[in-house]
Length: 190
Ligand code: SF4
Image (tube, rainbow, N blue to C red):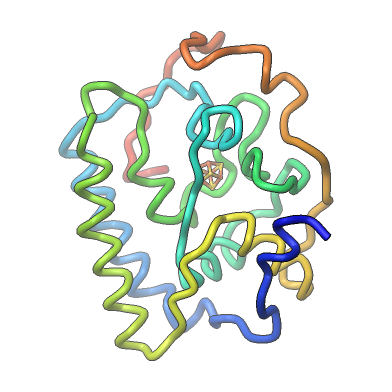
């Protein structure tokens, strides 16, 4: 059994996205507005969602995961054991933009934005926690792939299982320049 499978504790219950969607989206809108004020630029390098390749991990609460899974279109790529996000397409774009969780929204690799992600995460994660607690819901803050594999196991998400991310994932390093035109993406419409 894989590490991911071992980490799935309970797939028997799940937060109903209808219980949290409205207030969570209001928090996301507030967060997006603050991010916009900082003006980070996304060059669609894709590194933010290639977890293994760039050595980072996306954590999110079960409430955020429930809304992501319910509201995002079906992933276009297979589900691996944590190397990549199945919603990231092969051009590095996110297919779950409107439903993506806090951890995705705050992350930009723009050096002019350094430090803001940590401060915004601390403040807004506390607000998500307060929301979840006020509704009497479980927190269950875990890795993205914990939530996704649990959702697949319980039939709440239909997605093809796969190996280890993009076949080209090892071909470009951290300083790789994207081959497409840079996009200035406003976080408010991500
Ligand atoms: S949901 Fe979107 S932004 Fe978040 S890790 Fe997946 S592809 Fe990246």
